[in-house]
Length: 527
Ligand code: GAL
Image (cartoon, rainbow, N blue to C red):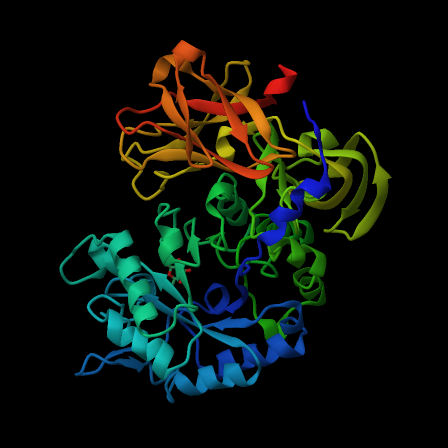
């Protein structure tokens, strides 16, 4: 199934090195709109005093609740009970601690706090109709470094005209206004509570992919489960945001560990949501787990993808660390089962060969050097994360459909019948993820990135599809046409791959393509 993948061929792959997911603290989970100047300052103090800043938590984000309405010139004012001196002294204080300051606003008119927390002064304070002036206010005048932009005000209930605004238009316009004001490096978080579509990576540094998280295992688990299939969209230094952390807010230690560890495995922003001034030692210890933080902050900027689903409630994830196609990988076993369970995986399933050095990062234990496979007992609601260092990297023979980026994928409009992933019984009788409804429009494609070849050369590409439910498709390898795959050629083509990472792109501008289960790659010489 694999060929050896020699490290020497991969030197060219180490060019990746992206800005990593945002780390810090945000006021919302504990305080909702009940925030004020001294509270924010005391959290900044605690960030430093607890040593969290030294672990990389460098943002203090002021969420909803600071607004005081606009003055007669349309300028922002602050809620005078909460921020009597405006925001600038607070931002300056945060900066004086060597930290970055995060702001909150809305892409439309009224904020979510106006709608859901009776925060009356948050009326018509969003960016809508004020893009340039607000960009000036937040960044030039007040000095914020980051902004989370919500969307209640873009929905009919949140603006005077009762309009449903276009997310893409609003967030793109706000991004442009921030850039035009001279702040292209300001990170914008798109807060639209579901994966908004592939345009988001042009406007946002990160984007929320779930409804609001809340304390308690069920909420955290449901939130996490919505992010499991989104690995292809966290790419190039842009991230899926699973929402602010509920760590330290009432779950068991094992559940808190799963929450934190999986946010790291999935390369989500890490925004602490508990009160830092009263944080418990065991919470602090977990949030300061530098080995897990390193998984989140890995410079490749990858979100781990599902490599095996054992059951509905048990998954293994994998991603490269440090170097694409190298011998160091992260493997995670995640279980939301209410029972303890046994996990096992062969190292060649995660593309590693020979002897493998294994360290488990949640408990922080060296498991020594192993060969063949890894077995591990995972407690109920538990997660174990491994740093694997193999002797050899093996060349992967199959890229499954759910590892592919679908340009038309989005979760905002469930009726749009656009490209998506479906769990269906495949040709081999086993349930597997598929890519459905791709194509039928210009620019609607499926893309496997980072298809790794050790030495390059001619390969046979066999597409595993459901042939009867749609059309064939054009195949491009590294941007070059490699032919039309259809029933006529048994969905099999030959193409040349280069040594290192390749792209394989499938498209059919005229018709929806048949459902794709995956692609199998075989060096042509071995046929
Ligand atoms: C929600 C958002 C939360 C929080 C809140 C403020 O829409 O998802 O994270 O920011 O608004 O009102």
